[in-house]
Length: 222
Image (cartoon, rainbow, N blue to C red; front, side, top):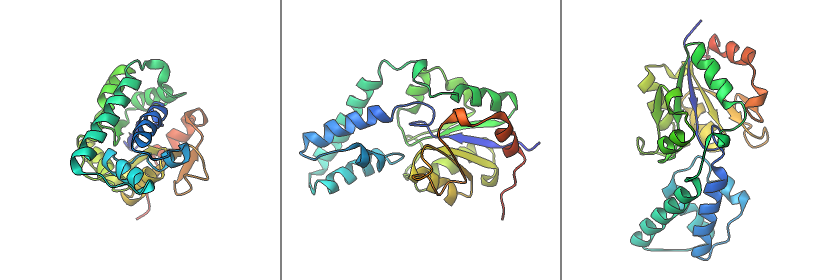
């Protein structure tokens, strides 16, 4: 059996923090006179805070100074941290623990590859930190998804070849990043939205041990 590296995004894959991002971004957008919908929020999934704010300002055709831009980013993060302050293990998405435990029992590498700068804090709150062999988050990368930097860094930390990496993502940008890195991509969410993924599942309840086992020996084509 080959040892593979399973790399998980955080928001919307491990925990349901997407709703808190939506609330924080909507509050920020409304504060500068921009309407903000859940549909628009989908376009911010897997995207860095800087790029997300740029998108919101572009949607509202707003121009602000660099100082105000920095202030708004900090305010968004403060609001988000307030929303997640009371997070607990009940926020872990269904069957995530089961999948993580199975992979660890099978001596597979497990890593986190997230754009979130709060990833370690969140994993600590939901008691998952010790389940990851490597963590790469927004503090460790300079390029946002769909650039594959976050996943390539995770592979490097694990000493794994990209062709032996499997990425779990809920965003279009994340799936693109995995594909660009030549990693196997597994979408968690809608098949319509994540159509570029190698596999798509509604959530981890649809992923069984047989499927995971089949990935251990799957060879990526050159």
